[in-house]
Length: 76
Image (cartoon, rainbow, N blue to C red; front, side):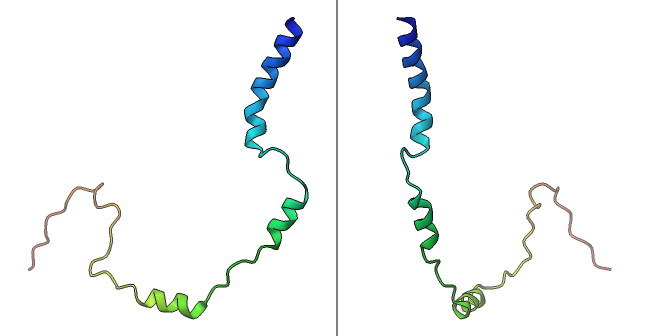
């Protein structure tokens, strides 16, 4: 009786690990994934899209919230 109980408990513990591995897989699945075509990158469209991005008026300061504010400089 104890052996059966231990076998059932081991099976319950191993079940989630088997589910994460995707169950049964054949070796052909790995070969098919490599045959998929990658999308072609259109360099002209990429450069045109980059040119459409407007330039910021002020320089971005990612640390502005971490630094205390500095008073404006007085002109001489």
